[in-house]
Length: 324
Ligand code: SAM
Ligand code: DTB
Ligand code: SF4
Image 1 (cartoon, rainbow, N blue to C red):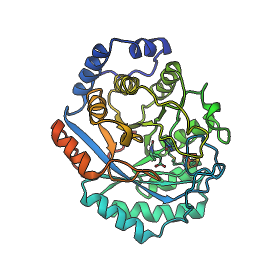
Image 2: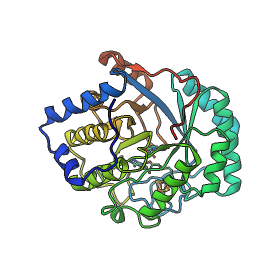
Image 3: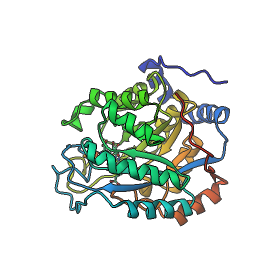
Image 4: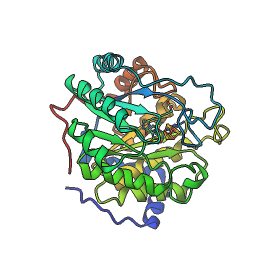
């Protein structure tokens, strides 16, 4: 059994990140095989249930009201549309349906509507995930009672680099929300974005924050920045793909039992880079031709890639397990 550690020093993480590439990938693959089936990837589909006009100023985001990104704002989707989208995703093989809203935090009225959505999607036999911004402990409790399986709330980057990206919500706010979710007994989905212009040290510090939580997040999304016209980060240099793969490998080593999700940015990744990410221990991804507001590879392309790699989509679990 792999022992889970929660006391990683940043120097140890930097040492892993700097290993010869083959040594790092070999180690990550060994950890992966000790904890997960070698050739299975879990697939989740995203739906934006409320798009745009967000009061936060996240420097990467198409949905912030602070930037002119040519995005049409939309009201909260009606329940029937959400159910239709979930059924389509399920028909295409997704086992988890993730609903995202561009809010700083949900009002209690908003939450009533989301609760209905969670119950309806669960009723189809899918796992549910939502990402709604900051949550109070009471709101997290309500979502748990509705049967929510996962809540996504990312740390995004290191505590040191964070202020370069977001000013309207603090790092501590994010840690507090994650704690409310954890305390309510909902599975935590938390990760970050690479390619924001951060250094390797920042990537090490982000991974350290995640890996030293009392419980590792059950799901760790690693996003590659989607550079959106009109946002402050639109002109950021692309991160070296091999550095991205290295970071995935180190996430796998530090959090051996967590699902590491290859998240935003796959349309700009080659098939070969994605194959390396799976080898490095990524075992979950977003599936379906849309993320929230940007494109994702087509279902057809992804299924062909899985076939070429001998990867199978993980089957639906009978009921979602909560590790608490
Ligand atoms: N508004 C909620 C919040 O931020 O908590 C939920 C939705 S937000 C879009 C979810 C996450 O998506 C962000 O924390 C960020 O990590 C990721 N994300 C958003 N825009 C992105 C982009 N352009 N490229 C990569 N990741 C992005
Ligand atoms: C996460 O870490 N990545 C997803 C999900 N959690 C909600 C969102 C990616 C968004 C990419 C940009 C867009 O489509 O707007
Ligand atoms: Fe709003 Fe979330 Fe986008 Fe930040 S990432 S601007 S909180 S929708």
